[in-house]
Length: 499
Image (cartoon, rainbow, N blue to C red; front, side, top):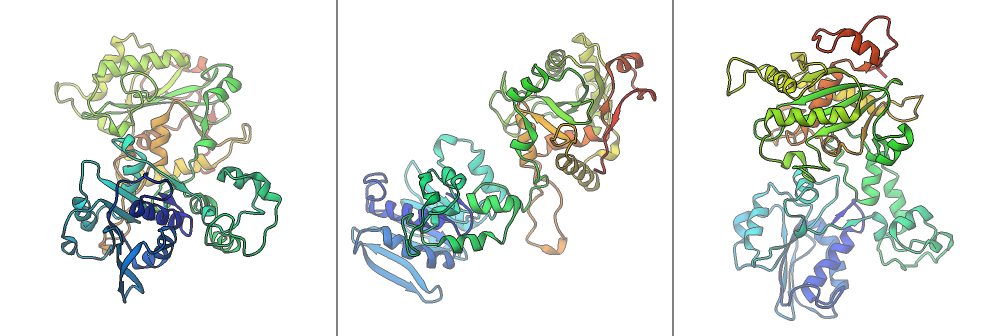
């Protein structure tokens, strides 16, 4: 259950807990047969807020016995009249203190998956189906939480509910039609005026209280607080990227160019080698009007062997010849001249199978075998490698370009075609590592490894100083000239990285 702070997360968490204990709410028989043994793991502050709401949704006199915890100013144990119970456990509890019989359900509020307490509680949940419920906000949750629920190994075993802050409002009368439509409630409420004590929406915060709370925030954080959406702003390194702003859909491409790809532009191909999983390739296009567009990527998310698979979940490498064959097919389909081909600086290393050649030479040989008639790969400058300064500089360039608007098109300078799913997904989830508990080591600026490969390719691409080069100038310079320089008399457009 994902909700912004101060939202309906508390209310629905109470409903779910009451439903588990009584098997009556919201639908009789929805939860397993009672009596149920349930543990609720959170903080005393949450217990103080949620306990009255759980009691509200339970049948009258269903709680037979209550044990108070004076330091919490609320209860720590409820025994139900059917023999079941609800135990409240603070996150600060010693894991050795949760020994005992197995339980039926574990409920976690603002979970910490690195906590030994979490692991200990999970080990107490019995049955083939381990029923676990998690309640958290998208801003407070760590990347581990995001990866567990949004990119699960077994998605059919997970159900996610997003709770807008307005679910916790006492009355929605007078709210804008846009918000009411998103909440899926009657739009007529927008023009209605209800009494000040109206509770027609069933929440426990007034509209004035909620609006006063939201006035503290703005931009993406406001969206996360209001609608319970993922943003992970506290560690996102490219927070300005939004699909609805930076993605060109297939329908839009047809309207703009009359076909799937542009009719003019210069291609820049970037490749990152790997041994445990497929090499990652991006095909970028520098447009005549200055924009940079990612046209294609390999592996292909929508077709072929790796259809529907996130890049970081793929295991098993492809042969060099196989990658080169797919690259040739993609470039032939786009049908634009190749201005440059860039390799990860590590491509200069020798191959493990043949120490007489390096990796970049092996790729160029394989390209030649496919009938490739364009330029050859070259190594990007080592200064654009994986040291912290280079990564930070490249990330700043990306952030500048996605924020800078092109006056001719009215869209950002850096865009992605809809086909480039893994590239966009990596950009969305490119995050710095979580800070270490020992803050004496300073702030951790290193990115997580999981989603860094798509962003690494963008850094290498920008380091090549991409610009539009007319087709005739590309051909005039020669197809396989490794020290290709842009002719001085061309009509190329240089990107202003300073914005």
